[in-house]
Amino acid sequence: MIAFSEPIEIEDLDDQSVMLLVPHKDSDDQAGLVCWCQFPASLQPLNLTMPCQLNNGSQAATGAICNAVRLRINIGQLINALTRAGNNTVRVQVHGDLIRDDKGRGLDGNHLPPWLPTVPKTGDGIPGGLFESWFKLDTNP
Image (cartoon, rainbow, N blue to C red; front, side):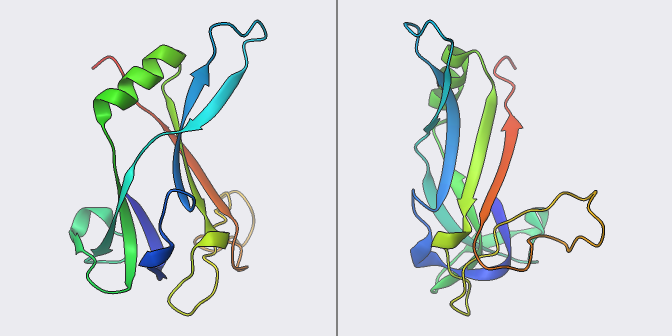
C-alpha cells in the first residue's frame, strides 16, 4: 500500500503512474545484465481513516479522490520471478508528473533523505517528480 500526504485524483492512477518493478536476467546474456521489468498489479484506490497511517484502517475510495492505493498482485508469480532472477528486491515507483493532487497540481513525488538539513516531511515542494522505494521479499519462508 502507498499512502499520499495529500488527496490525489483517482483517474490518474494506472500502470504508467504507479509501477512495481522486478529484476530479470537473460540466461543467454554473457555480460550478466540485470533489467527491471514491470510486474502486473491492479490498483485499488483507498481512503485511509487517518492520512498516512496505514495501520488505522481504510475503505475503498468512492469519489474522484483518494489518499492511498493498494497494489494487488499474484504473490506466487512474484516469488517465481524473483527466484528466477536470483534477486529478491522489488522496486516501487510513483511518477508524480502523471498524478494530480486534488488542487490540480502534480503530485510532489520526491522523497528526500532524512540526513539533509531542514528536510520537510516528504517532497521537495515542487510539483511532480519520481518517488522510488524498494523492499526485499523473503522468497524462502
